[in-house]
Image 1: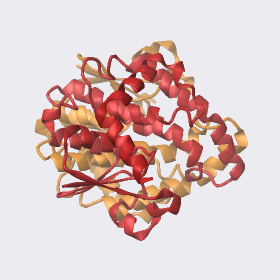
Image 2: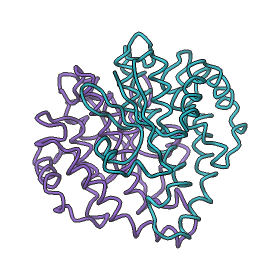
Image 3: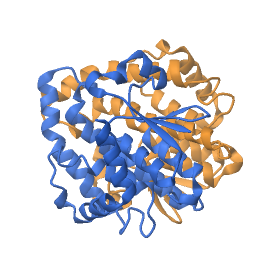
Length: 208
Length: 208
């Protein structure tokens, strides 16, 4: 049994969808950000970073979306969510997920989590102002340079699709029109039609 | 033959050391940030993100340090720079590198690259002011929660050590006293004594 700690509308959605997609036996625990539960001692014992996701496994606890996604792919190879048999394709898979966590998610985080990098409220407001541009630039680069189609890596559906979908869900909130990126917008509509995606979104909404 | 595009004092040092460590046949191309070569059309054809590192392989070009490190580890399994035979240990390896790229490197980047996230010069200065705290907090977490010793992952030296060393080289510049973190400071001294590390640092300095 795996246990996923998550918060609704967070990047933990990617790990949640991946667990559902591979048919894992798992349970979820909601961390209530509105009550700052992620900073409570009880949760910090699970994840000292005070973030989600965290995946409790029989071997220990894992954090960081790219690592959790890769672990799920490796634990359930029959689901074929990563090109485990091809070193270069796997490197491209890692490259894409690494870009999402280190650049795209970070650009987004400057809207709601500016206090991580600055104390001055005026500076936080200045950061928020630039978010539509920085997030938009990221998705433009994905649209024109990275997305092969019909899926992120081409013919094969992978965990990259799940992760991209998760971050694309934030576009409107970040002040970016999703229709600026026709391939990503179409991808998002197709992802939303997948039964596992609908099921996980409904489950997270139900708990909120 | 592999070709690494790098800039001195950048995170590309990690990929450079890893290539040397595994005994890869490779050449390096210096990207001159002082002349903004990373934003020239010639380099953007290599890496549209305008960043380093980029690794040109016979299969295509790879970017993002965690992806390049994992690829090198997989291409040269005899060097044993990643726990490729243990899914959970490999996930911990990915988790550590993911934290470095998405949180530690990002905290550091707010000192010199604040313009990525904000336009207002006052806000950029406010960001810079907080860098010693944010970078210090990251290394404190590594010191107390992640670093197993004598190497990052415990008994086994891995690419995580190379990547941690690379970012620890920035501590003084970020206004953080490295001696606050005895385990990481000792690790850095041991890394600096490795012949491959000395050789790569000398090569990057010689080209600067």
